[in-house]
Structures are given as structure tokens and as C-alpha cells.
Amino acid sequence: MERARVEEIKKYMKLTEKIDNLAVLVIDMQYGFIDHIEDRNIIHHQIAVLEFCIRTSTPVIVVESLGLLSILGRTICPLLTRIEKNPLHAYIQKGKISAFSNPSLVTVLQRFKATKLLIMGVRADCCVQQTAESAIKKGYKVLTSGTLTPSKIFTL
Image (cartoon, rainbow, N blue to C red; front, side):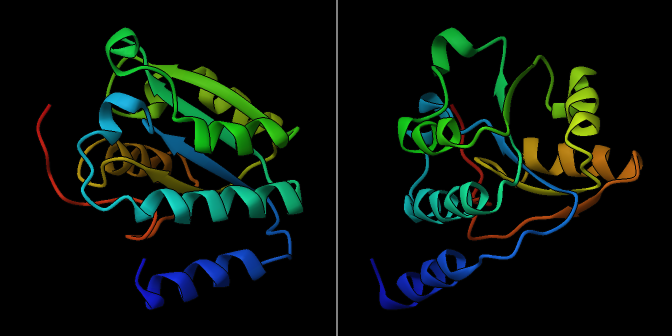
């Protein structure tokens, strides 16, 4: 891994202060999607964020594509093992591109008192973008980063 990326990951790992009303959405980080990602470093960045969530008791919501679940599999183990260590986590399945296509997402976000969302996932140009747009329309503040979500378009 190149030195600049290692330093960036160390920045995430140093974060210790809880950000009020923040929840992290992990979108479509399923095995079938991950096989098509060239830059696997995003997984290391996402792990660093999930470690931050454990340290600060920041809620994490895992969103998985429902229709393709049998083909794509579950969220990858390196992420799931961190997510499971956080007592504030939930799982949502979605049938459409936006995670907000499942109304229970709003219920979970309300339960966690989330008004800010850090969205990370497998496709910036599709599910992450649609979810971010839906979140903004619903009044959430949205954060994301190119180091947490690849933007390169691929086909299955």
C-alpha cells in the first residue's frame, strides 16, 4: 500500500471524538460487488471508519441489495467483524437503488437520532449517489469521500 494511503488511514484511526447525531451507512459492500473493485484500499479506509465507530459508539447501518442477495452474498467479513463489535448497528435490505427505498431505514435513523450520514459503499455513481440524494431530500446532512467509495463504473 502506498505511503500516502497509509498516512490517510492513520488519520481516520486517530479520530476519537464522537460526532453528534452521526450514523454511518455501509452500502452494497457485498462479495459479488467487491470482486469488481480494482482499488481494494477502500476496504482499509472503511475498516478504519468502522473502528472509529466502535470507539465512539457511532451507529452503523448495513444496507444490502435484496434481489441479488443470493448472487452477491452478504457484506464482506472484514467489515462485518467490525460492525458486529459495535452494539449500535442495524441491517437493512433494499429492493431498489436508494437505501431509502426501504422505509425502515428512516425508522432506524430516528431510533439512532441521526441527522448526519457518512455514506460509504461500493459505487459512488449509483447506490451511494441515489441514497445521498434521497437523504438530502429528507433533510439529512450527507458526508462521503472518494477514499470510502470508488467512483469507477463497472458492469456485472
